[in-house]
Image 1: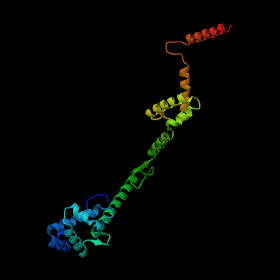
Image 2: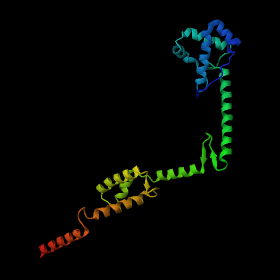
Image 3: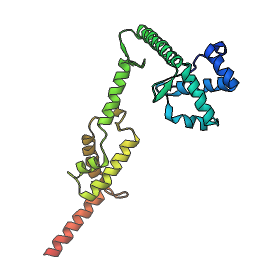
Image 4: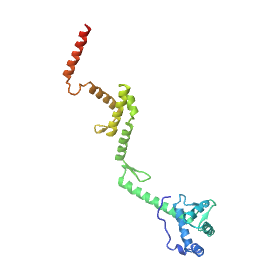
Length: 237
């Protein structure tokens, strides 16, 4: 279980069972008892496995014969309880139950306080997380952005409807990198239709390719076309 502070009774050393352990093992026995209590609190079910006690002896560098004797004495005087497979302390189980009840009470109190604060415009989850209308709208917008985000292969397939395979592949990568960098936005708004954006991209590409090269005016380009036409006509005569 999650670690937390557990109560260590200030007068535990005067308990008759603890006094018995101290009479046989001295303060070493007292220390062993609290070591086992800590191990039980750390366990998920607050219980330890009987056949793994040798590992405990190894961890604390204690003779296994001594530790087994200590363990059996604790069972005999009911400091610990066992079912033959696992052993535990009723004291630890009681601590956990008390801790869980306090934790639940605090959670309910916190939830009630949050409900009073946020009124009827929000929903409080089991983990005391507030889901407000603003959060919902933000989540919807984020989901829309995710929905409109295609892969490079999606873009390439769409471009293949209007362009050759080589150009589609090259332009798809440029399209993806451009919109990936700006968060899939058109201007300041989230992209609504990536297919429409692809069509605009192709239209702009064709317009750019049809424009005269840098340093050449449209008039000059038209004159060259006429000259080429005249030359081809004269050669055919």
